[in-house]
Length: 225
Image (cartoon, rainbow, N blue to C red):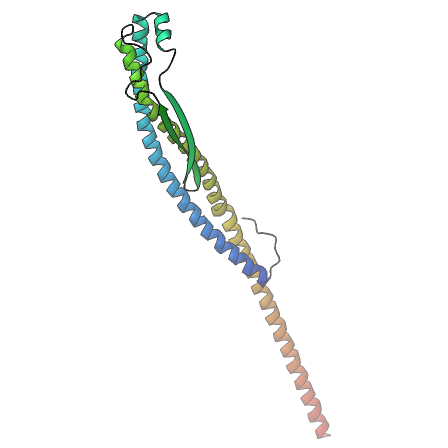
């Protein structure tokens, strides 16, 4: 791992040690966040799978009923029966926060003059299969909206998990090793400088002692003369 280009000083060493502590704490927090998001993502995927299977089954039933109704009714009668729907749907979209990710919340309301009657036609000229198809579609609508919400939430969570994974890897394999190596390099440089200073001090001390000895010797010789 390449060492950062910094001045090997004690001030820089202190600054890098603080950065390393922050990086390690951030790495732990991001790992915890990633693991928790993965747990929620897997729960959401399992729930989404069950709901998708249910929705697909109901849609297939509705489609089969429509095929039978189309076979027994003429195109004109079928189009006339479905021309004016009796029920309208309004949809409100809001968001909720899951692990710092804003996921959509879909709230729908149906408007009908008669809440017990969803069929926009009389029963004399139509078939029971058409009634079954309309009833099934009315039942499957809230499940389809919930499925759309869960799939979008899973998509957003997956994107956030990928971003968090990249940040974790960048800290784990790039920043933290680089800071560790740089701190080690500065520490070695400072120790080397300290040993060099100590060696110079010892040499200076030896020189001063030698000068002192020479001075004492000269004084002794002067006193002897």
